[in-house]
Length: 255
Ligand SMILES: Nc1ncnc2c1ncn2[C@@H]1O[C@H](COP(=O)(O)OP(=O)(O)O)[C@@H](O)[C@H]1O
Ligand SMILES: CC(C)(COP(=O)(O)O)[C@@H](O)C(=O)NCCC(=O)O
Ligand SMILES: [K+]
Image (cartoon, rainbow, N blue to C red; front, side, top):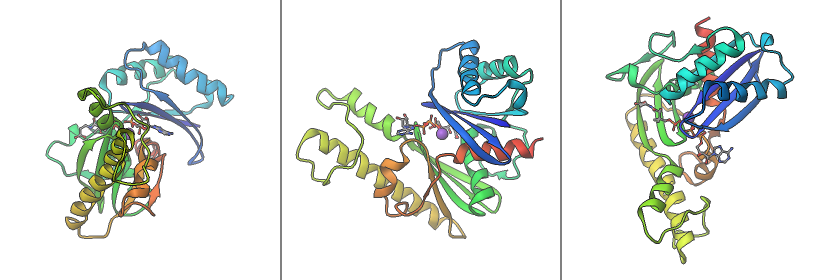
């Protein structure tokens, strides 16, 4: 059994892989100030749910974009399993060449996303990750060509609520019309149809800069709220496990 852990800025996602398949997954809110013992407790709870002993987990793989948690999780994993995890970090084998100016600064989750696309979907693709940020990572023939980073759906909505006196927090779902006739549906229209337009605008530009037709794969917690309203994504794949799968493939490449 291999345990993969993806630490994002909103959620920590875990998945157990057996024989190259995800047999179970868990999602916890990213609590940025817990101790390594509390993170160990969280992992241990999932082991209990799986009726697994620590010794039945032959490896742990970690992707993190929250530096303060990375070291705590390495401590927690070493404490629980007796060995440190494989960590996505500069210097590991990825099988792709990162063509950005400073490859070391590219988020581990973005690398996982494009590796998963390369392994499972095609040699030219765009991974659209609707997380705390909305990211568009592009891979073509084993080259990570670049990424576009926009605010996340929840992040933008929260900022709108925080920065305005009279706009409330709203449930992010598509309203009937873009002609909002009350404050709630007006904000919903702006967020859902606004992000659908943002997504289409960026994908359109990236497609124009590619030599081959990219496969479009969405992931991230907000995907299912936005994808149906995007002309480029509405009938395309949403793979909630894209990042964890990429992490698993990276683990295998570094055995
Ligand atoms: N299963 C889900 N169903 C609905 N909303 C979700 C789900 N998972 C996450 N979300 C929402 O999507 C947001 C982004 O989640 P996620 O993609 O895990 O972010 P990150 O990868 O940045 O940690 C979360 O803040 C949460 O509100
Ligand atoms: C852009 C991100 C914050 C997205 O993370 P998430 O939304 O999953 O929390 C993360 O990929 C990151 O911290 N990247 C580093 C900057 C870069 O990739 O250029
Ligand atoms: K993510």
